[in-house]
Length: 199
Image (tube, rainbow, N blue to C red; front, top):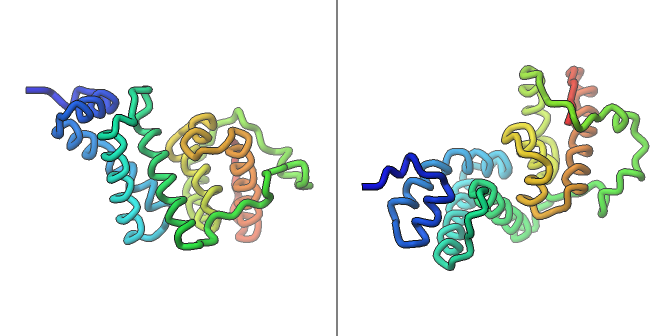
């Protein structure tokens, strides 16, 4: 009898592709909580989150059965990418205005904001109290900005993986983060919340 708990997600996925359905049960059990939390955070509606979660796993199963998964060592990112695409398709289908970009090409040279000079990409986000304040401010951000902040600070993903997961360039990911930080700083000033936010 196989010890599924000792296998990596990628190994379980390949076992499922080979016809081992118990491997998929382990994959689902392992990933459902984190994936659902990501989806709920993005859509902010439990009923919609349930639908997106189910659609995501239907797509995961289909792609695995079609042999469209290869072991790249990043199963969780592959899973998140599918969820991201389902969310974006849902927004498009609903003609939602949740997906808003400040400029069409994220050209930061058009901005004249001193707060851009304060951003240092190499520093880590270390103040846990600030994280609580940020959580409240993030709800007011457009979905793409909220998503990149969530992936960077709550899932600790590097910008390269954020870009791959969301299907955009690294520059676009960085641009979204910068806009998010600018917007959160503005909201923090309005609500007199002290933030020391760094990339």
